Amino acid sequence: MPVSEDVLLGFETSDDAAVFRLRDDLAAVLTVDFFTPVVDDPYEFGCIAAANALSDVFAMGATPLVALNILAVSCSLGTEIVSEIIRGGSDKVREAGAFIVGGHSIDDDEPKYGMAVFGTVDPEKIIRNKGALPGDLIFYTKVIGTGIMSAARKIDFETDESMRPVIDFMKELNDKGAQAMIAAHAHAATDVTGFGLVGHLHEMLEASDVSAYIKWDDVPLFDGVFEHSSAFCRPGKTFDIIDWASNFVEQGNLDDEEYNNRMGVLCDPQTSGGLLVCVSPEDAEVFIRKFEELAGRKPALIGKVIAGKPGSISLV
Image 1 (cartoon, rainbow, N blue to C red):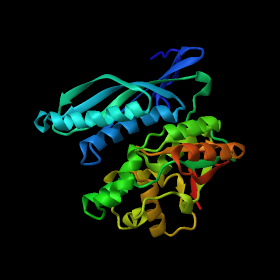
Image 2 (image 1 turned 120 degrees about the vertical axis):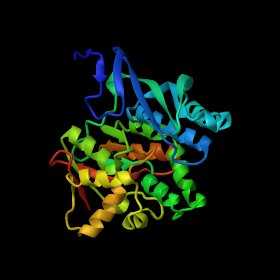
Image 3 (image 1 turned 45 degrees about the vertical axis):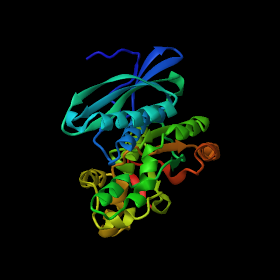
């Protein structure tokens, strides 16, 4: 099927959004994402789903402009719950400096919510998941473990109180990380969602023809995440991701148990995760300072890009 030369990025890549050139200095960035509730509160569900959908635009170094609601919900739930979901989404879109301009809803027994988002970027300034170079430092802007913590809450291993930091991070926009990576001239970036930290890092490394190592002790985790992983309190999808990721995440000197426990964390599917950013050592301080200035915390330096088998990851 022929593709226009103005399609700068499409479905053939693992990038976060499609990009279509409108003119030499302007391109459209388009993405869509929705999912079932990850929290009980309908307003917070709306916030999280919107932040997650907007994240794909921010990961490209683009600016979101408008969004369309995508809502599936049973009519039996009533208008109050629907209104709260949409209010949460609307508040997040407004926080991002964009506007909701419509959408579509259907009657469905299983609630789902998300958005199609349209943004813009200068074609010469697109930040892709391809472009990481040997020597680049790898930063992560949020905390890992949303899937494991949600699974633990379902069986009362966690409480509403202990889940509050997890929910707050899922609600947080990735706009601050995006501004910091633009300021630091990042070589590559992606957001971490359903394939876990190592899954999305692998895609970035493979696209860039490089390898990397991750410093396990520097990966930011929610309290209790490693213990839950070790007790096999994990989302069902995690086990499939581990089977896939074991082909490119080297076990090294780790025994089978420790390797599996760490992989349970690193393969944890994230909801509205942070940005994974590759920055040259010369620009790393700019990234750190800018992100800290905007977010009030430092990004986590979790590893380094190295020459090697494309897509492979070592744990140190």
